[in-house]
Length: 414
Image (spheres, rainbow, N blue to C red):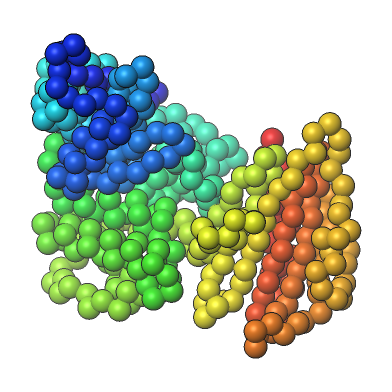
């Protein structure tokens, strides 16, 4: 169902070209243009990416002295599709490169934006809504969610998307109204050819829904950046079009968290479904092997810890630390490791089941470390050949049930 652009780039005249053409020079060409246009670049798993907007990425890969790449455009929207073509053409012209493009919408050849949007993107959206409306509340609860991102917790009676959650009542209303296309500009991040007020608002909504921790900016650089960026996008959107539906409650909450004076808003049109924005207000799940584990959505990830995956909320914002890693024992069943439960003086230890998995958990007696009282928990969860190893630290008493509930949130995902 997806809409994609595939392409390749190489020097026009290989034998006589004076261009230095290798992986490093090609990436520098991309970086230079991206910086000029205000786009962001980064590497992931051997690919070089340019991000034009939330949910809007162009993937580059070096192979056989050519730059190959593609971009899935159906979620970011028709405006993003046109912007990708524009970026590739600018790159080819600036660096004297030969560009080959595969674009089934025909936009690369015909440049008819309205036809491309109506025939491909709006039709894709209509088909998508028809499809998911038939799932029912007992079926899937996500669509168009980033595949490599965390897994959001299920929200009762709602379907979660990249931009917000939709109730079944809303989705059925779209179908029965016969005006499904009218909702498309609330769904696509970049619906018009230009970056209009809806582009900035929808960009903010994606960040609110997926990335915002709803925590004070002074807690971390991540909080500072995401809160500030969302505020900037929303203020730009409102300044451009004050009559556009606007998430005022979320905006004012972030202004408070960022210690930012809110802009003056003489009139505000309420955004339908604003209360459904923000997956990190709930539990989120991450997958390791054949199991997934749940953590509070406002937990940060410690990128400096190389021994275990470390998630935390901050000493002054709850004082919890959650450490986890998995071990796989090929050819045999995983077993409990007794030494794992010798990290303190055991107060209580017990076994229990989590679905088809076996679990063991120990509560340790309180221990003072660096002038703080630590209430430690260790756990292991076994399923087939995998063992999940968990340590949880709390800094206040009375949170045994909370820690136990985190361990019990582990799910079998094979």
